[in-house]
Image 1 (cartoon, rainbow, N blue to C red):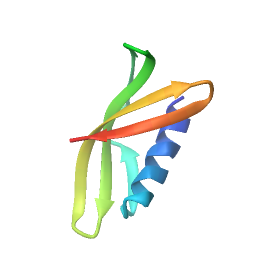
Image 2 (image 1 turned 180 degrees about the vertical axis):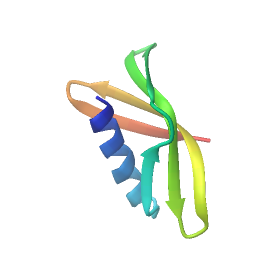
Image 3 (image 1 turned 45 degrees about the vertical axis):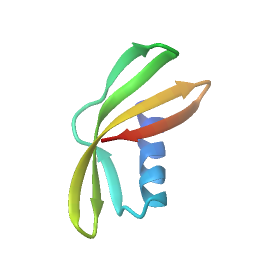
Length: 70
């Protein structure tokens, strides 16, 4: 799950013109309203430097869907 969520985070970050994305600390698995979620903080790198965003990754049947939150 962490591997798939990390991969989805990287692809989403690239789609938003970031150079890279990686989990800053180990994400934690929590039971959300709609099932299991992986919550954590990702470090995003662009031409201005680094920024940190909270993330929520929903995982359903082998498919990861990540949301960047400020």
